[in-house]
Every structure is written in structure tokens, then in C-alpha cells.
Length: 127
Image 1: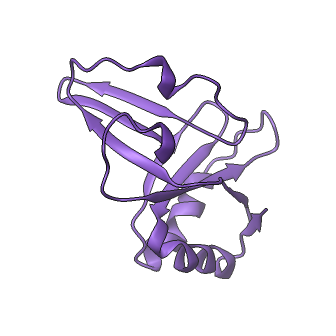
Image 2: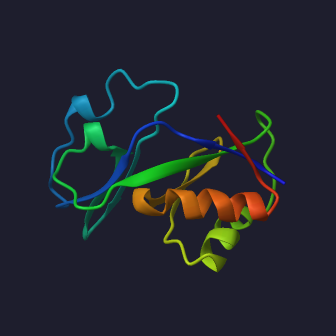
């Protein structure tokens, strides 16, 4: 069993050109319950962030689930334990990690199905 927190608000997945400039408004005044992930490649820049901070228009809204680990304790297989029940329920997932924990985005319109699948798998959803 893993503890999973549902972060507030909707999230966006954005694709920018490789030469795009990221404005400080993207990451400025980051709240404790927000996460932003930026990845660069020769093909472009990918940004995962709260929808209100999105640097571009996005079509699909996502909700963000965060694995709540005991601080500083890495546990092998936690991301797989989160994603497997979602895959079995046929819920699309965008997974990403920070140094401290793992996250999964699920489509906002499928949130109830996603949380039900996680509970059936024995995971605990925290408020």
C-alpha cells in the first residue's frame, strides 16, 4: 500500500519549441502543494505545471497525484505500484519524478475512475 495525495487544481502538459524562453512567472511563488517539471531535448521543451501557470494554451486538463513517501526514504517499485492499477483501468497516465517522490497525471475527466482503481489496489488517498 502506498499513500497518494491529490494535488489541488488542474495541471497542464505543454510542448514548447527548443528555443523557447521560460518566464519566471512559471515557477515564481511556488506553493507547497504545487509541482513543476521541465524537460529539454533537441525536439523541444516539455513543461508539466499547474494549468494556471501554463506558458501556452493546452487542450487537455490533468489532475496530479503525488506519492507520499516517508521523507528521505526511497522505495523501489512505488511508481509501478501507482501506474499499474491505472493501466489496468485503462486510465491514461503521464508519470514524472522529482528527487523526493513520483507523480502521475491522469485526465481530469477520468479522476473518479483513477482514484477508484487506486483504492481497489489497496492504496490510500489522502486529503
